[in-house]
Figure 1: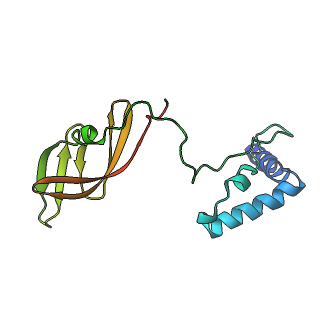
Figure 2: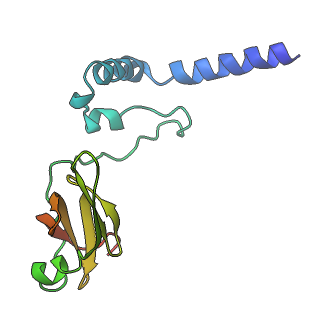
Figure 3: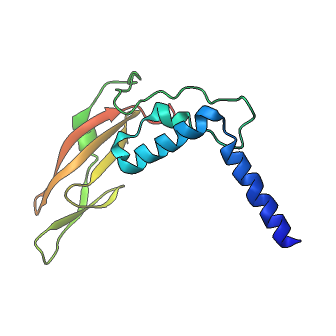
Length: 152
């Protein structure tokens, strides 16, 4: 009985996958092959046309908008105050590893090293920096950007 159940389930899954529609099966395999060959060529619009076998018959998802290269359009609430926000990157400890590389402990953030990105919320905005260098004198951050907090 268990073997029959497994066979029935396998057939049901196979029918669900292959009954995606005449054009869907061919386009799905094309999309999967294209993404497998070159993941950088991922086409979100084509990917959104893949059919989930559990969707109701005839239902298609709404079109997907490609936002990977778009700039955020949200207005910032309040003035941008880089100098005050940068002061919040307060090193509480600096240490030099045997390799000569420095690490810093930033108050409220934690341990950082060169190349790390850090963010601080100040005045209702989120300020982001990349740590360009750490020396015995302190850290040198490079501004990356300011944005509104997520969810606002």
